[in-house]
Amino acid sequence: MKILILLTMLLALTGCVSDQNKPKVYSRKIEFYKPEKLKVLYSMPKEKELPEEYYKTNFLDTKIAKLELETQKIRNFNKLAKASVKVAKEKLKIFQGFLAQKEAEISKREKQCQQIKEMEKELKAINKRIDNKVQAPCL
Image 1: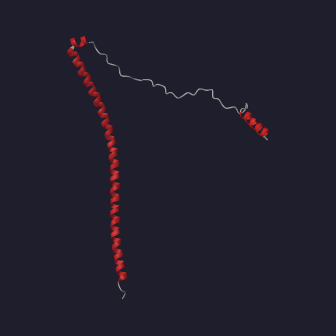
Image 2 (image 1 turned 180 degrees about the vertical axis):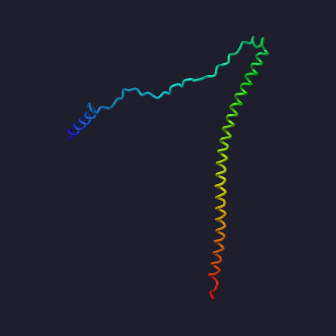
Image 3 (image 1 turned 45 degrees about the vertical axis):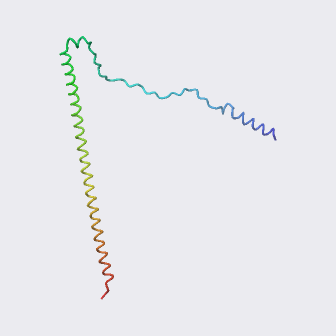
């Protein structure tokens, strides 16, 4: 009996490790996704600083150039502000239409609630009349 158990255990162990049932070993390397760097399509040119001697000798020219730069920045900002104002106005019109729709729905519901309250009062009055007629002695 012991020999039979030993033989079945040996057969089971050798059967698990046979050529057909070998444990799988993965030899491929796992590679994780690495996003590619995006290409820079456009970048603002960097302003080169002029040497200090230029500022000392051409003081008025540098002041004029700085003022022109500031005015150009203000013009660009104004263009962006005008564009954003147009978009905001369009969104405001859409919102106002939506608001008018909702206000109409709210007023309709308020009218319905008022009608329901009136109907309840009428029903109570009708019920009182019916009760009075039922309680009144018949002639």
